[in-house]
Length: 358
Image (tube, rainbow, N blue to C red; front, side):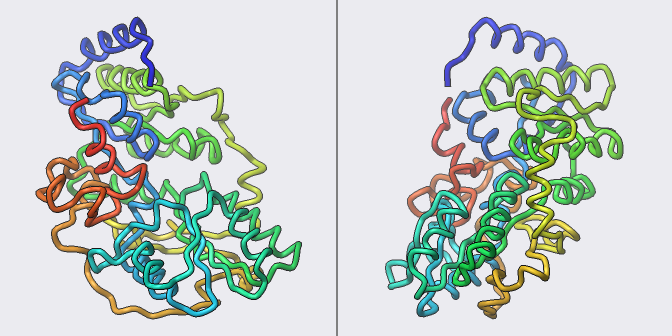
């Protein structure tokens, strides 16, 4: 990423002037996590400003039990698993077991870039069932919903989704409610905000008295968000500011939300690090049951705890930094990961490992 040096130095000067007391800030977006690491922003912060990563990587917050269910389904004859590439190397509760390993054992696993790609796989091979692993937040939920609507319209019945889609707001509420929560401000995810709008994050200052800033993804845009947050904290304010107005409107994207709402509804769901959260995951509505992979391919797996030495859950909640995990860079690397935070292209551990020293 290229810096505008003049703007960078001006913003850093303002941040340094305002940060006269310790300030812990959290980004809640995997793209922000990677951009912060790649541009070396953490190393530029004054001593009083700490940046921590929150539950903003959808692959990372997927719990091990859901991965185990997917791994079991992968071995079903006549079934093709269609997935984003990040999911292939995520281990379940057994270290080393992943979709990549199952594919080596004969499972049919295809990498796709969208739900529509998975739908076209099903259309091209009507003799096989295609199960799309729908991972993401409100950003990718409309695209998944659109694929289901098109499948119904085209009469493609060998296509279904396994919904791992989640909603950001309930997770943030759960995080803030934790006894050990000690974050003073949020850098809010621009991609999610482009769908749900500014309105989707107003609860942060209005209900919890914490400042929030919706940010873009260039280094200067992230620095601007940090500058605005430190300014609010220095003045004792708590407001939501939108610094990504070219993509985020107050009401968001009504069309995308309408498509999403037409076939998805909220349910109680499980998050890595946060546990069960009410109304935090998306499932297909009853009228789309024919495309619900969880109903179409019911599977039971033995419930196991997460890998004991992996601390992805603590990283996701901001309790520790990736480098504070004793396995980071030694027993856990991108080549031999223990958890999803080291696998995903948006994972905090993967970002820290790739760009450490910047």
